[in-house]
Length: 442
Image (tube, rainbow, N blue to C red; front, side, top):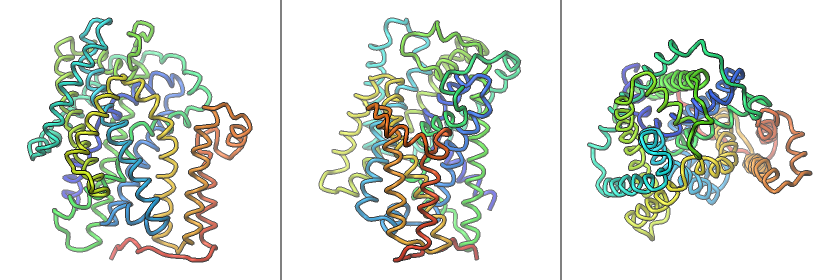
């Protein structure tokens, strides 16, 4: 069981490991200053804990979240939610971000400050042409590269973090930004959204089921136990990586005033620390490794997103979807890494609460019968609160903003959590109850 869990965990680690896992922890470390430990706790909770729980819950149902959401909420909502989710982990956020992260971490530090825009265009053109070719001819070679290079790259990052801790660990952190000084845990929790891993868990849970089934199990108990082993191992791996990268960013003496305009802080910490500890030659090696690692993720996301849309809306061929998503990813990538992060966060602040609430409902409904109208109401109220949390500050609707801020846990960026719990409790008493199959442990 441990061996099977370790093998599957290594594969899933390679699937999850991407751009956001690299750049956000060191940025959090630098910006959180003395509030680092509270901030990284929030980040690990949302970026690791919720993602792994989402994966484990999804992997327990061979039909995946499409079936769970259709049964508990409505088929139309399942399709709408998954469409937005796949667009988020695909062409609008994750696909362009992998390209821009590869450029920002690996290539940009070696270029003159005034030539980044043209080189980003050249780099992303070559990058997406190759990804497009691979997307039409996915092979075991791509899987093997991702499976082996990603863990190797992760090990190299751990070595960088350890050496950086010995060299810079005693240095005083910079002052915390206003965001982290006000609510370090809440700000870190929101930054964890940026990894996209909880959303990816919804999509990857079906892949995890297929992978696990190939290993063969004696009974359902062994299967479920292995899922939890996988979850624990992946959670430990990412938690160690995040804390280490965050600690490096917290203590590495990066002068942000000297960074080129539009440079990403997390990418700058990685590249600057690599050059400071290992020299310029290591920066070239880092460029190759991060580019190949991100490239395999890009090609895989084009394939998975294209297949989802073709299976859901079969009027268009897979090739059409792959072409459209590649072009969208290429166009958005040229906005630059910081721009992608800036416009993606409001969408994630709406998607994540809905996703977490769905997972909570699925777990409770495995144990207790819940009212379908109650579950629908719970999702609706969470979606409204999440949307209002984003739109009220954006459009300066003070009354609505004050109302959201008056909710419990609003200071921790969780104003939707207690209403979600209250909705689930209400679902215990409302009519038209249903109970999904329990986790089989025997």
